[in-house]
Image (cartoon, rainbow, N blue to C red):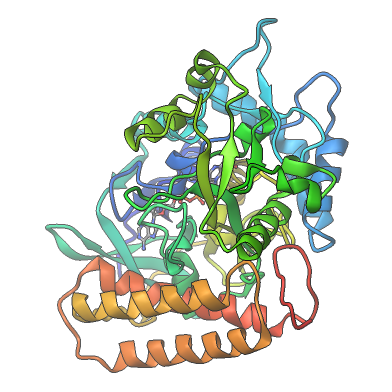
Length: 498
Ligand SMILES: Cc1cc2nc3c(=O)[nH]c(=O)nc-3n(C[C@H](O)[C@H](O)[C@H](O)COP(=O)(O)OP(=O)(O)OC[C@H]3O[C@@H](n4cnc5c(N)ncnc54)[C@H](O)[C@@H]3O)c2cc1C
């Protein structure tokens, strides 16, 4: 039976990448449905603290931004993608401002620019320490005002529709409505990261690698998943959830100390606390091992209480809730999974190797991060590449029948909890900041057998958690495979046996 097209385009995910693509496509006359599995603002985007990198400062230039990005990427960036990213950055900021985003301004009236690890200049456009929230708020407001966009919340995309090798729709489970299929010209995967495969992560609960699993299920090419970024400084507290202490704190002069009070970065890198993330994360891990301690400390006591409350109000309030007074106490911190540099391979317009399937944001691998992402380049990447994808004409509607790809079977939630814990244990122990050949082989086997076990368990009624657990297993298999096959230590991949 011939099918009716419901919209021109379907977007999976309502973070910065998904909403940018939706808005720009709608402005070009397309009808768009945005499907998002939780509330609209549930995303990594809303949690971003530091800001967005753009060479808009007086002595800065896209060439300097490009240079810093290439250095962080350790020789594995795609230079063309990097140039496109950094040259598009000022325009991306202007676009957000035109939509109503508020960024901090300095006393002279221009944008106040922060500095973060790996950047040679002050170039981080920000709004206090909740830039992501401001950006997400702005995007939601703009999308809600656009009549060509339909947003469906609590709509979990479970499978992609494929016909003659072309992606032409999605199957979803919508809370209270059951199953619903959307037939469209093209699908944008903007599902964000996969941090939940690790025990400690800064990512929210929606970051379960769904886009990687959906893409891989129809043969989308995936690369660089071994380049997993660990944020050096997340709160270590037995009673509190992992909470990120932004790089900007170190940019503002925050220092790292071991339990003896020694500023240990002197022993590891000349750039001290402003060395790139991977260097700082490895130094912290090495220091913790050497001293046999559970954490190190971030000291921002050089700042006045008023300055901290002004510049880092969220951090100040959050830490106070757990009894830490940052103007006089050092903050206990540990590294935690933070960002996935790899993903579904795309060209400069977000196109994957599957016709009709686009990807943008953290789920995609555009080539800009190489072996390591420069801080604050990811929000920028989400806007720039999702925007470029919107300007590519979508493919012609084909009609006819289409097959659903990939398994969307759920198992009992209790079994899924057990399997996810095993996954998190093996990923944390074997595929963390420092890796070994034996650990990677063990992880590869364990992830494979957990996947087999999942698929052999009896099917249960649909629930998001089990399906997300399976997606995490598929994404983890890509991470471990990439790490096992990499024969050199580069960027974020560090195997002591190489
Ligand atoms: C704590 C924290 C701080 C950060 N700070 C910064 C920073 O200062 N600067 C910077 O550049 N980057 C920062 N990052 C990284 C940055 O926030 C993310 O890389 C970026 O926001 C990713 O945007 P996205 O649109 O790709 O994905 P997200 O914003 O994560 O959005 C993904 C969306 O997909 C939805 N989704 C997922 N699976 C499905 C499915 N199966 N069906 C339907 N919907 C689905 C989710 O619910 C969500 O709406 C930070 C990240 C974290 C976690």
